[in-house]
Length: 623
Image 1 (tube, helix red, strand yellow):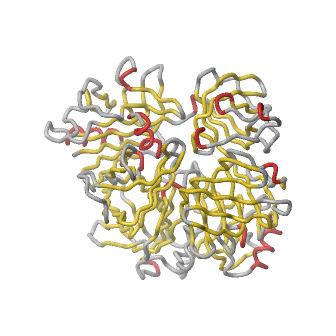
Image 2 (cartoon, rainbow, N blue to C red):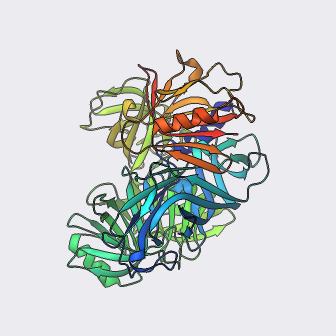
Image 3 (cartoon, rainbow, N blue to C red):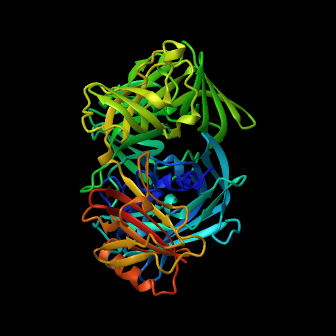
């Protein structure tokens, strides 16, 4: 395994979005934050002295197949020194499983006031981390920077001195925290198990990321048919008993429901939910309106349509199929009996004539046959699971399978109206080497070829796609035995629209001269520095650019508007800035010739014509 591949395993943990995002939204009364008399996830505070705080979690695409740690607590510190706990119970979270969504973690009630610091306590003692190696999942063990095994870690972030979190009666506030996997983890695949060196850091901002759906889970409390809404006790991450505050989910005539496997919409869905009754497991995807804090669901699942609710569920990509047996490897199993876990071994799924198959990502979801499930397709499979060692068998012959929209990253071989040929880099987040495409074609010679993967693009605009350029496609794999084409695209994202990640490291000891210039107009890396390590690349989708192959060091500038977070980290203390000018001024002051820089990671956009990297987040690790 070469240095570039090892580096990509660490970097791509935040390939397309913020990693480990925690969304906190505070207000008093009103909106979807529940009533003042609703159960609190914290403090015992009540009445006009308190406001509500919503905490959510998201993650980013990448090669950490699982990154499960125990979140022991999340504390907020007021300007007067008072510390407020917002999580009443240890919560085990797999940060790698929240690529395309923001999960509502808790709805807490906290005292009014100005908050200046957040502290996240993580326990890595029983961490379960998996990375990709040659197409297969392998275990990884976390270590501190000094090489010692990682245990309990407190990660602190001081908020921007110009913008603090303020909770007050009638005042709505927003606060985000980001546990950045790419910036704070380095993977060494030459060791067994693989070694992950962790230097935890948090990003923070007084805005939330609206680019992803929000997911709300928990048992049903009540249905208000007249208002078109229902209330849940928030219960994330497949917990069985905790209650982390109450939350209102609003619906409309276009909201899609699946209740105990039956598809419904609008008011009929609310009727079915009311019939199912209090305590029924629910799961909703939707958006939060910033102005009034109201959450509206695009889709709702309830009862046995919720993974692990009275039924066992496997979640992952089909890596092979033989007859009516599907094979997953490196997938998540959610058991009705004991919650969820990542399975590094295989999950064998048996389907049959009585298996119901729904094609999601379209409105309404379509009922299709079992032949629609092919190699590379992302699925949720519902049935009865049995385990033997690290292998699982799921009987879905009388169960259900939901086909999920599947992302495809690759390089364009040829693009014509209606059809694109792609060399696969990742399919459903897994490399081409993870799949066995036997049986996908109408004949053996027509089985899908990952080097010449044929995509039906229909009426989508492919005019901007150029040969050898990276591309992202979203859609569904062609039914088993029916290729070519191999994939049906619903969305095409060209190279110019893909996010970029820049990362550079300076070895274990770091360097006191990481930049040739640092000021409010930008950062310029010192690419002649002999301390530069294995990380020295810009990654745009599947394309990797070696910084040393550029005509000059790119200028790193701040984003002029939108969600931004620029962080300086020393040990377990983070200082966050929303202003790029404030960030560079503080960085210049700290780089006094004595302080060493270990690494820099940034997310944003790269303009090759001007050699400019516009960053919406930057993490600089100092020693």
